[in-house]
Structure formats: C-alpha cells, structure tokens
Length: 525
Ligand SMILES: CC/C=C\C/C=C\CCC/C=C/CC(=O)SCCNC(=O)CCNC(=O)[C@H](O)C(C)(C)COP(=O)(O)OP(=O)(O)OC[C@H]1O[C@@H](n2cnc3c(N)ncnc32)[C@H](O)[C@@H]1OP(=O)(O)O
Image: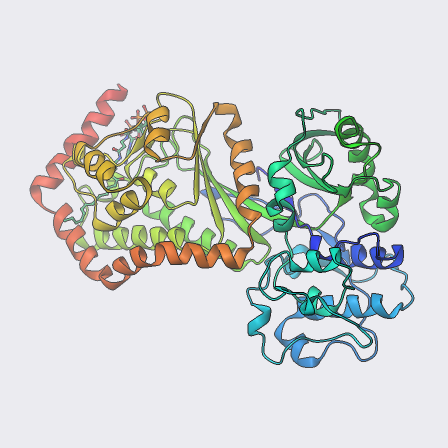
C-alpha cells in the first residue's frame, strides 16, 4: 500500500450562478458531493509485484426519485444520467429538500460513475428527457449539442438549467481547465501555502477576472493524497460546510490555508468546495534488483491493468518503479536464455499482450521514470501517454537491442517511430542509443525531465492535465492515433511469435545473450 492520489471532478456545467437560488445550489452540490472521503479501505488481493492503492469513499445515497421520475429507458441506459435527471427535476420543481439521515445506505466509490458517459447527446436515441415545466433548455442554445461548454454558455446567457444540460455526456474538470480563463490566467505570483494540515501544490485560475478557481493541495494526513478544492471568487466560505456537511472536516482543514493564501491574489475569503473524487492508481514495478520483465511480472502487469480498466473508479495510472535507480531493465534475459521454444513463445506472447494493453489502454498512463529505462523498459514507458524522467545522467532511456545482437521487432520500432519520428528512430535503433535525460527530452522520448524528487509530483500534475480532457474524446483520439500500429501486430501476432522464437533460439543468439548476461554479472563484481 503506497501512494494514494485523488483528483476531483468539477461539475462546472451544473455549477450554480447568481441566477440560481441557493436552494438549487445546495441541491446540485448535494447531488454532486455524495461522498465523504475515508482513508484506505483497500482490500483486494493485489498482485505481488505491482503495488497500487486507492482511497475508497462512502456516502449517502441520493434522495429517492420524485414521482414521475426519469423514464425507465433512461434509467436503464444510464443510471448516472437518470440520477442527474432526477436531481435536476427535483430542483426545478422546488421540491422540499429531504433530510439525509445519518446511517442511511452507504456505497463505495466504485459504485459511482467516475467516467463520463461516452455518448453524444446527439446520438442518444429517443431524444432528451425533459423536466416537467422546464422552459427553454440548454439544448435550445446554439451549439449546445456539440460544444463542451454549451451548458455554461447557456447559463451565462440566462437559459435556465434543464435536464438536457444535465444529461450531457460528461461532467469533469475539463471546462475549468479548458476554459480560456483558466488556461491563460495563472495567479500573478505563485501562491505558496503550507501548514500542518495542507500545502498548496498548484493554483489554477483564481485571479480576476476569473470567477472560479481550483487549488491542488496536498493533505498531509494522506501521505500522498492530492485534493482539488474549488470555489467561486466572492462566495462565502462558511457556506461550504453547510452545502456538503460531510466534507466539513476537510473543508475546515483546508479552507484556512489556501483561502487565506489566495486572498492576496484573488480577493477576500474564497470558498472551498470539496468535490467528487476520481482516482488515479499508482502502480509500482517491484521485481528486484532491476525490474526485469519476467514472465510473472508481465502476467501480473496485464492482470493489474485489466482490473484497473474494468474498475470504473479509475481514470489513470501512474507507472513507476519501486526499485532504486532502475525503472525497468527490459526483457528478463533469463526468460529467453537457455529456455525451450515453448517457454520463449509463452514469454513473448505475454510481452505482446502487455504492450497491446498498455498501448491501447483507455486509461491515462503516465510513466514516472525514476531510474534506468533501457530496451523493454523504454517500450513500457513509450506505451504510456506521457513520460516524466528523473534528471540523473545515469538514468538513460532508449532501445539498445542491437548492442545485444538482437533486433527490435516491428512493433517496438513502430512505437519508437510514432514517438520520436522516422529519422531519429532510424539512427537511434541502429546505434542502440541510450539517451541521457537532456537528450531524451530533446529527441522527444520523454515529455519532462525534472529533479528526481519531483518525478512523482510532476507525474501527478501531468495526470491532472490529461484527466482534464473528457475521457471519451481523449480515448477516441488515442485510439485513432494508435490503432493502426496495434492492428499491425494483432494481424500477425502468431507470425511475430514464431519469428521471435526462431530468432532467439538460434545458437548464435543464445551465445550472444549468454555473453551479455555474463557481462552484466561481471560488471557488478
Ligand atoms: C526477426 C526479429 C523477430 C523478433 C525479434 C527478436 C528479438 C526481439 C527481442 C527484442 C526485445 C528486446 C527488448 C529487451 O528488453 S532486451 C533486454 C535489454 N536490457 C538491457 O540491456 C538492460 C541490461 N541491464 C543493465 O543495463 C543494468 O542492469 C541496469 C542499467 C538496468 C541496472 O544497472 P545496475 O548497475 O543497477 O544493476 P546490474 O548490477 O547491472 O544488474 C543487477 C542484476 O540484474 C541482472 N540484470 C540486469 N538486467 C537484466 C535483464 N535485462 N535481464 C535479466 N537480468 C538482468 C544483472 O545480471 C545482475 O544480476 P546478478 O549479478 O545480481 O545475478
């Protein structure tokens, strides 16, 4: 059990404006904030060699649906949308707020739809569900069906909230991050705040004329827990605990600090709302001494990835190493040296499987490369969406197969070419180049080079950047960029396995692998 990270969903499109009543505001926040966060209750059996962790939250259920609630079709198609529909319909009708009784049924984080529903409102069969009595809806606003900011735009132009807006396929921090105001308005001076409870990692937006701000803060109680706290300039901070009573603890903890710190740059007391959490798993490779990709580690990685993909609470994985100084030494040469063809075939299939899974993963994968990253290690990193490398000249990265007398298969080559381009790959592959950090950055093998102690936090910031994009759009784009490369292997997977086996089982190759392993062992001595 190691790192715990959580990011926060930001339902901006549904966020109240001055045109909505406090009652509606409360309703919506209550709807969007059903989870008091509790510290780890993680119990699944996890693979021995990959360590990842999460926090689970518990919370009260939303109020039962009002009479004449969401159509059954909608409920069946999307419980999320249905719940949103109920909530909004409730608010629009001015139904009395139901008391949340302590001890009512709780549910764990994984029951919540963390991922945006990957559906376009345009394509939804049967059209929009409408709240009785709703007037103009966001749909009637030009561009409402296509523009991700249309709900907010609709609000800004005075259109009342309506279920159509709430049924939009996702709600995430994206509007905050992607809105020009947030992209271009960093605080005038960096805001630093630290006390015994909380330290501010980053402030997004928050300066005039921005209306909203978002803080990424580290909660010390959770050793690596990151919270996003957001608010609207000028609101009363004392409202936050009332709006989401279960969050009082955290709001109180966090509010004094960041709010005070921010007030210098963004006006007087700012509210901090603790919003829904979304989870990022941190997966640590642990196969000492060098994280060589043994068959067991490959298998565990594939299983872990599959688990995380299937667990809808996760949107991203940070992949890093638990072994000092080495991210991953690549193929475990002992798995292909002196082994029979059947074993080599099984091993290579596992390698293919891992690459396919990682390369096409629907999750955001960020590699926090905190050590040497040769050959297969580099491929693992290249299969991620983003790479952060520790600035240490010993931590070199690249495909050095030719130096071992072996040849990178076409899909490793393709991955390389896709990342650094044809000419650079041609050169680096033939020379078996291992790049030190500065060169790796220059050639485009990694996206960031940072001091060693900042690798994890930078990876987390990168993750936040990637998670700020609506999942379905990002996933489809990723697929569009990578599918052809993956398909090439899928079409000839068996032939590739055959090639590999016949190649590595050659006497000459076995001899050079043996000599290489021997050299590694002697070097140590
Ligand atoms: C026609 C074509 C068809 C098909 C294609 C054919 C073939 C395709 C195959 C291509 C794919 C290749 C991908 C690969 O990944 S090949 C593996 C390449 N890996 C390396 O070259 C890394 C070698 N290791 C190192 O450089 C260093 O160990 C490292 C920098 C990672 C760490 O250095 P450090 O000083 O910290 O550790 P060492 O003392 O060197 O090592 C400690 C022990 O670990 C053993 N070791 C190291 N690497 C491996 C490895 N890859 N596999 C197995 N064992 C490894 C090393 O021997 C030491 O062992 P002991 O002495 O402790 O027993």
